[in-house]
Length: 190
Image 1: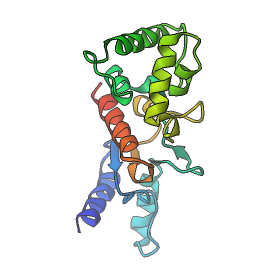
Image 2 (image 1 turned 90 degrees about the horizontal axis):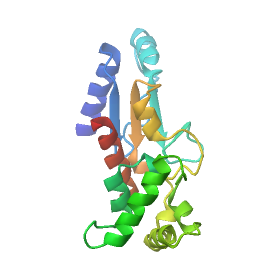
Image 3 (image 1 turned 135 degrees about the vertical axis):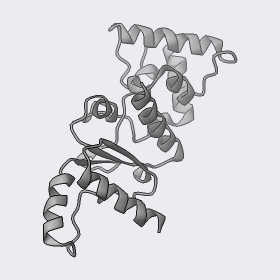
């Protein structure tokens, strides 16, 4: 009953308030929040349909209207290092190299669109980081935008919808779910 009850609360928030909502949905329970049930009272259904126009569902699905994607540069510096398994003390040299690369990228010298860009560098420091990313399997993660579509972070920073349902259940791995969740929370906190 918890999922059903929360669904009712979310519907009432959509109908009765103008609050902006961000829903981290680990089990894909609320991906149909924008849909009106066939059995709904016609008057309520019309009001709900109007309110539900502001719902956007972000999914890891090839046909999704809002693909659940991030760019490597969207991540906070600590999250970038954590994704690569870097400790600032234990991995001093690689951590410093990543910090230097990212500082240069943020100044416009080089754009790091994803972990793959590190591997293709002629410089040995980024290349080592790229090898680390490859060894960790980061290239296989489906969340990297690779230049496709709007990043989830851009939507969080410049909203075009009132309610974002972030379908964590559509992701391939727990690590991708964790990174999306951390990025959403840190973006909202910032």
